[in-house]
Length: 369
Ligand SMILES: *Cc1c(COP(=O)(O)O)cnc(C)c1O
Image (cartoon, rainbow, N blue to C red):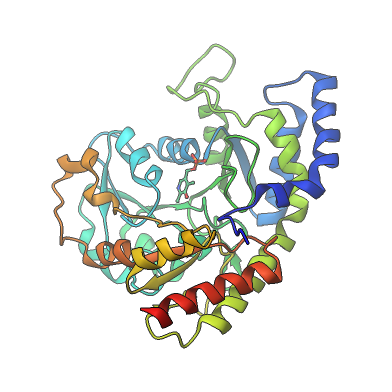
């Protein structure tokens, strides 16, 4: 049996007729940049996430860049974030000439540890950028309280958490701006790159809309140096079809997670994911903490089971950030996590046979060694 890490064939098969119909409409209209489908998607997303303004853009990375620019974070400013995330979280801060300040994570949830944030605040700190890692929101009560107390903006990097909630409130709706990625492997993936900013602030929404078209308004007049970062009309047409299925897919992921939790529980050398009682995760990943992680990874791969390490090197130790002056041992919880995490297939199209096969393979490894 083969169990890939993600099965886009299975995901797309039932959707292709509707996607082809929507694309045919784009081909009939030839409105490739900022076509009506972009606005339609933004409106549907506003309703789905219960946030006032959605601004589509070219990728999740650009959404973060636009958010930082809209909040005028630049030269010499500091932004507090987590080192246990995808590269773009910190690279966008760096590319805006600001400084990423890394704060260690909670060992149970892998999200930024709010108890460690205040010690990292200086008079240059402008914002906190939590990441809702693997689909579980960070502790937004604690983070918003710290931000309020210190007058800091909050940008939620929600590339992995679309539709997740904290105390019943949608991720992306806590901070000044929330960002989404529609990279093909995200829970709501396009057939290429795409992203989005979300905000409840009308002024920030206007600024973001302007910044994604070179900062121009009116045409050929520029108040800011913006980006060329639009959400492609074709990608919007595809995402409109897929958004309809998202809630049901998230349910499927949670169902699979419950199955794993039940059947992997009690294997002595692995820990199943810990979801905070306030959180509802959408399981972008199902991530185990395991002894002999690399041994388990090889064993699963030999059995035809896809698995992956997110992330093998925390961002404070990346070569490109050497200039920030971090060294091994500075953020030990993240460093330990990098050595021991393994994500296994969780996508909603997994069959019962496949998920049972994954469980059996994990059990077999720990019985054998
Ligand atoms: C995927 C991802 C991004 C970047 O999104 P792209 O659409 O690939 O640019 C940013 N942050 C996190 C946490 C991500 O997982």
